[in-house]
Image 1 (cartoon, rainbow, N blue to C red):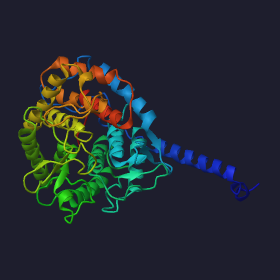
Image 2: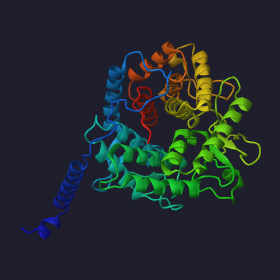
Image 3: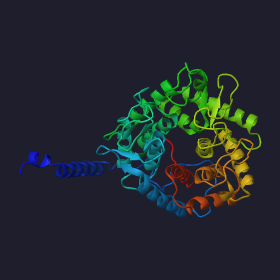
Image 4: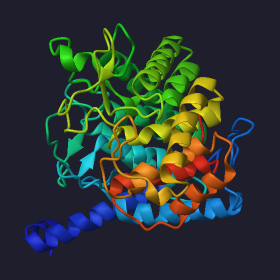
Length: 415
């Protein structure tokens, strides 16, 4: 019986397609074998003097992080619709895949190299998936959402947070494995960084736009920004790696706005709102339902990532501005919770009034990164225990928790 006859039968044809997918994926796994320069657990990235580590010790912290990674990988890292491609299964109400999740996946896998022998294969597969779903606004950015069949949904534009993490992860891949293999990571990073600059940075105030869909014709969105996109360490790395002082200006613009928002709107808490508007005049928290919902002007499901971003930048760069902002958040969280991480709640007004009545790992875990650049060892240990002993939850909380664990266990790296 010839192949054409076999392939004409639907069931057998599907079997052959499955075998071809498996074979292609197996070939891809076999081809990605570069030795990592910063293997997980080597702690080669120096943190600034005075940065705290969990008292359990590095070996135990590494073990907990690696164990949670295995759970995260099994639950969320999935083959995509084409052989050799991977995606992070966010399974939100809107989409099966979102660009932020792809960025998280790339950050996680590049830092887990040396522990997971498939790390580079998975990283490359995530990148290939991204390149297959370009944004309609700029083809070097990622279209922000796809369904389970890998089709774009909810428009065809970018979300800045995903692309920022993707660009940073590509720089890490160049540092981790070099760019002489099947993917030139440095070249790909340069493309994404150039696209971010061209399409998602405000040309005047140098603040991050919400995505490449924002245009001057929509003044409200054009002069707004999302606090969780203020990835200070990323801006720092873009400038250093590319030798481009433009990114120092971007870094300073965000540091300045961070300081103003904390001192003006949250002097006792340091909390930032999800969205900030009027960035061209006098910046302020967004009104309810500005973009996502009634919590848009509060410390909600976007801003909850800020303590992690600030904490790891302070730990790696030593920037006193990041350290000051992170410590303000940490000291509020410690006081508000009565030194019990489980007492932290899900959404807060900027004055510290709790609006949610439940504890969420998404809101609690990031404070561990901020605690690591403060001085209370016992509080950091409680936050670490909360993370290390917690049960898996959903994609969003688990991804942010894993990235925070990588940061606090001294497994974060910079380009």
